[in-house]
Length: 170
Image (cartoon, rainbow, N blue to C red; front, side, top):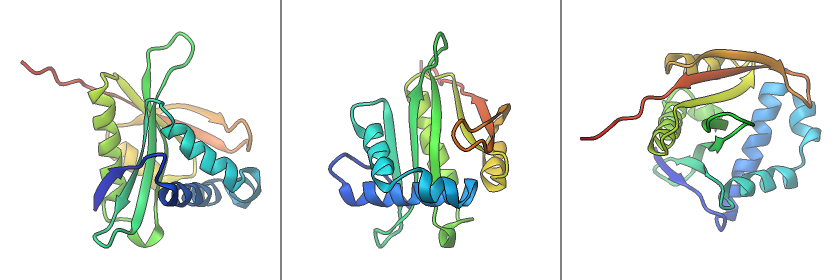
């Protein structure tokens, strides 16, 4: 798989990532959340929001033929009074390409990007029933840091977090 960051002018990739964000919502939170709560226009705007000068990346994984098999979105996040941290906000791999290490590659890319920016922690939020994603993050040293309902859907969510070590080069 080849990983590449997309840009604002890559409308085809933006549309595909938005479609797959919807597929993630349906898969994890059910048809109501993915099907009617978030419009495709809102999802495309959300992808563009990450690309519009923010400290963020939208990365796609392409197979040798150029088909997009997965994506991830990550950014630097700051909450009031806290030290900035890395947040992986979305990861999706098409069902036929799962268990091939694509999500692992995407997570490693995000962690590397966070480290390069000097961040000391990264995290993600997911549904507490998203067993495959929770297992991936757990294998990579993340631990459960918090549980809370999704503010819109009330889905039980879990925040997985991991401290990052920054390599100091002499």
